[in-house]
Length: 140
Image (tube, rainbow, N blue to C red; front, side, top):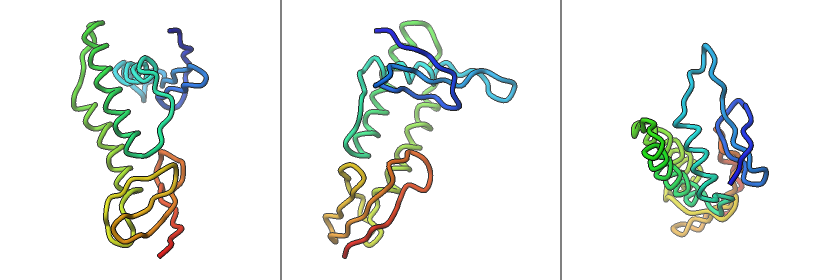
């Protein structure tokens, strides 16, 4: 499969455009081939979209596992500490969004809506992968 590569302010993969985004090396930003390989792993695995935040965490884990295999194939050093740190950011993001604001139960969402199976509270979250993920729309 062929992909277009585009310099950007982040690493990412756009499945619709078949584009892999990367941060160019600068004096302030060192080159990190492992992050680029991780995004290629998403492409190779055919990751398109996800239905829940937990599914996104699992997709990230699969992409890091594939990145490890690619690194072995091409002789690039794989850093499990980077993998763990990156995955932990998704876990933290999921916990922030998915923890019930009423009873602290960790829940699973569908799209941007969470429903707590413990206390029946409902809330919505933004579609953003970045900070400030929870937007309350509570129903008791």
